[in-house]
Image 1: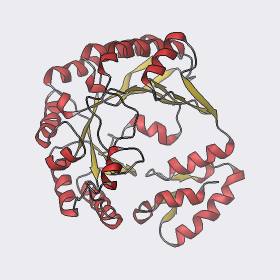
Image 2: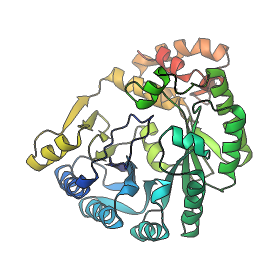
Image 3: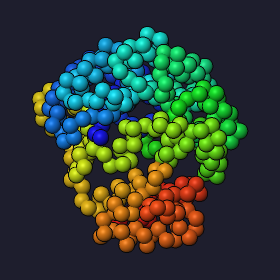
Image 4: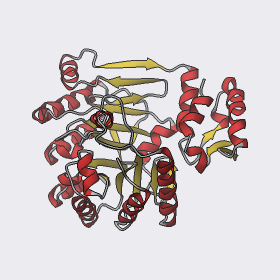
Length: 370
């Protein structure tokens, strides 16, 4: 069940916390679409699976492209690859880009899943992190999508925003649930090196939320979503039954996928490949058909480490029988102390992180890696 990811790096403005590859060079959108079409041709034999089951337009801000540009990319994909008639097609969108006309066009193209970058329902918080929409626009965007026939709507939320209290977060979750969405992706705010947010913290312009409060926010989120029938299936992802993101699940399950566009990553089961995180270098490389990517062959140890890292983040956990015999004894030995402390549990031949274990999951994963 292979998938295709299309990276659209364009943003009208850059959020202060973002360390993903993006650009505000909007005048290069047409040229970029042409480059994507050419990359599809150059890499049409990358995936060995015959049928593509998921397509995901991420960014950046895919909704910064016109309906015509998005349609051109999708037509190119369908011309080069065998995309299943019932494939999951996801588009990420900024609330301020969403209109009835665009929604109708996306539906007609075949998109059946919309991921809306809400991030917060508090206007002050949105201004602090540099988002270009307000809370009312976010709510209206979700309702418009539902009215236009999108039955699988996901929203992104960020918790632990500067000076955010637990009461603030509870109100955020309440407002999200009032929208009757099918999926929530919720991430703890991260102060990444080189971002404007980190510089703001250094200048004492924002106050970071303490770890204890962040953990309480996460625990409340899990509890509130569960009560609404929205279950955690990966550390940061929650869905109603049958509405889990098939595309993202491919990443966590070790399924092959092709990444197209500047900064996009690919995995063919044996190696990883990533395109250059430089828009103009990507465009030059595609035009001249010279190297626009780097590639890494994965060793057995690399594969084990990825199994641990990805498996323990999911609801199903790490399947011990899938871990090579060379590493299984190390894996089970390192897990013992965490099982005794109630941070991991062994369940039907799998290691699964408990709710308490998720709070220190990065530490657990690091210990279990080689």
